[in-house]
Amino acid sequence: MQFSAAQIAMMINGRVEGNAEVTVSSFGKIEEAKAGQIAFLANPKYEEYLYTSLASVIIISETQELKQPVAATLIKVADAYSSFAILLDKYQQLQKQQLSGIQQPSYIDATATIGEAVFIGAFAWIGEKVIVGKGSKIYPQVFLGNNVMVGENTVIHPGVKIYHDCVIGNNVTIHAGTIIGGDGFGFAPQADGTYKKVPQIGNVVIEDGVEIGANAAIDRGTIGSTLVKSGAKLDNLLQIAHNVEIGNNSVIAAQCGISGSTKIGNNVMIGGQAGIVGHIQIADGSKINAQSGVSKSIKKPNSAVTGSPAYDFTAALRSQASARNLPELEKKVAALEKLINELTEKK
Image (cartoon, rainbow, N blue to C red; front, side, top):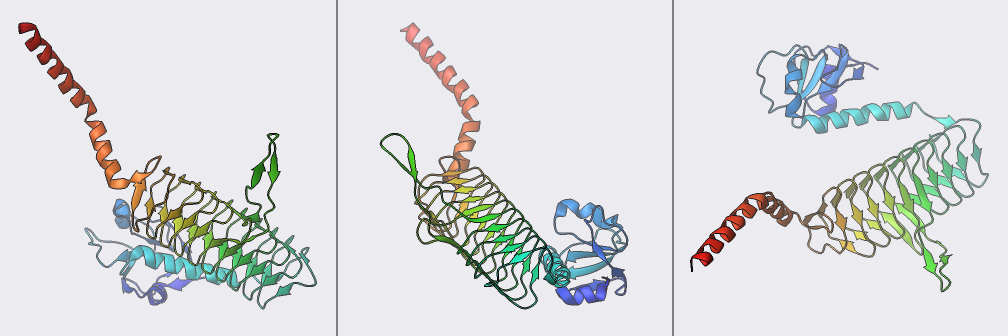
């Protein structure tokens, strides 16, 4: 597919500077792009490539000041990063529209309901009474257990496993290898030192507009639902335990672990490799730094914490600053001790 600079500018509400008729057919990073590709500049660290890039079209912000001539056609927009994301999304949607029909071999139970314009890839397994909404894409080797509901325009990438009774909303994206609805980690200790499994009879509910990365695990509720609310974005390699709730538009980076029954508010940001204990609450707007260990509830909205155990981010910075001064303070204390000793000896 080829698009002219003028056509692209219309898609992202931009203004063309240069040859509006030049065409591009693919994307490239600004430092590596070739003729016929489109790139963007959002990070000032890459500004030098603006003047040397071979890209035919480059998207930049209106506020970007040019220090020397640029060979490429420019499309100026309010926010280069957001505009490029919109363009990538439109391109991806065009690609998705090319997928349709049911590939063979695949298994679809006779009681399943498949909507219009659905794509089902080879070796997919669709269980009893499954519902797949119109326009959704089920890639090869996906497993949808009995009574699973998948909304409209949802994309489930290869190898995803969704256990029975789970509910997936509209416009959801689930990346390869993720498992939704496995048993929660529930075992009751016995008097003889063994553990008795607690049956996990709940489900997982993923609301509209959620995106889940590759190889994540979201466990079903013991009773009731593990819930990921609308607009949440989850990275790769996460462990979300039974009966956890993740609020609207919250984002969680890779390798985080969230223990059972913890409630995470709306618009929360959690950095990579953070760990959160069970049965606590994280207030709306909280920010949890990477590798933090959260052992108690965060009750104040818009708080920022770091460390393990996690505590106030600003206080942590002050502590770090004080720690850096410890060698100098040690010298001062030693000097004072020496002075005290000398004064004592004179008496």
